[in-house]
Length: 317
Picture (cartoon, rainbow, N blue to C red):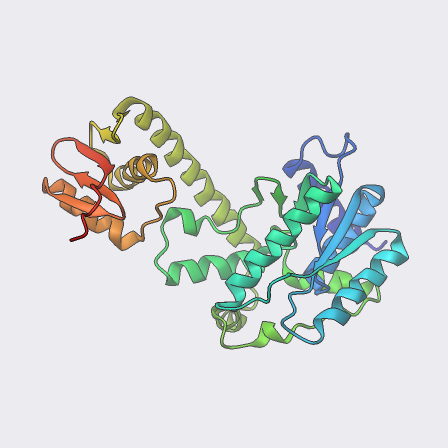
């Protein structure tokens, strides 16, 4: 192993130890989402060196491209050569609608089911620093708040992303030095996708260290956690639940704190409610004026304190 590969391996194992602290000393298995692209092949090869007997890989063939079957089988052959358990997953229902978001939902659903069947507690994906920067820029352009600008999380539930501090170029180089030709997915060049347009725009920023985007995302994530910590305590002190709904007894808080407390109250009344940002802003403005408004099926009354309860059922004439 050359010095560059050894450095990457050391960084990968350090990231894995940080994200799953008891993994190295235990016997749990790590699932790998491997599409056959250079990023996920780097994940496969690094994980194989780190813990060869405790990994399993899965490839999702979304059924969107004729080449998808051959690409999944290619990953399977690489795994067989190394004695790695591998499964090809395919959705039962064809993917329709907004292709990228629908494919993502199908992919994670299939991976979740595979992990459950195989008793695999952890899943690693190959998101890297360039993905992080693209995501943050896309969310800035969509007007995201602190939650969205926190970017891709290194760890969320049982999903870990140990490559978030790695640049795409170094992962591509690592795979190429192993003599492996990675899959080239033409959808990564489709200008119809927002991410592809952002990626192409970023090519003019050559020379910048994209890993710094992950540092910024981590800092924003820490700020988000601090805000949530504050909201948890304020909610315990100032939100009172009743048989009919709930009341926010005090509303004189900074705007972001107040917005999150409002969402807490709405979710108490209707856990499935997911209002858009503009709806939340309009509701807060009305409540500040002491008005009564309906958001979804929730009746919201303003004033010195805010009251929330299910709206009365409409009578049909």
